[in-house]
Image 1 (cartoon, rainbow, N blue to C red):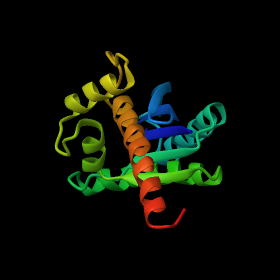
Image 2: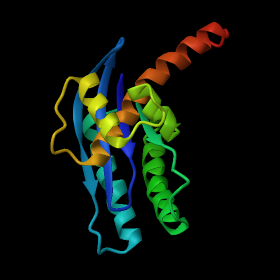
Image 3: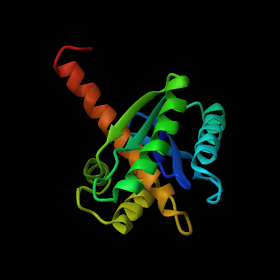
Length: 168
């Protein structure tokens, strides 16, 4: 199974693609989609959707995961973030990729065991869990990988829950 983790933004969107085999995770790709900051928002959203579509074509993920927006940011920022998320969600839906969303505390807890972990702790745990060095990577890239790791762990739990409840 291939999992695409996304950390949405209207200027920079981090991404990470993991391959999950059993409980093992392997990093396939990571990076960020950057939009020209001086472009009007509609053009940035179109660029974001186009770049994501190209990424989907190359990596063919089975599922995609995003973090739900954090409510502590100001309303203008939240609106722009919601629009960027909308462009990403629509692009994923057009390709019929299963989409999972997780609260920030769920992501932090799944990766570090602490739902209140700071970004440095989460980034360090991403390195440990994937056996990589993320030195010099953008913060949104390690955040996207954390979301993908969360998804990998939650999917296993959700599958076991479905079996237990007789839905599978």
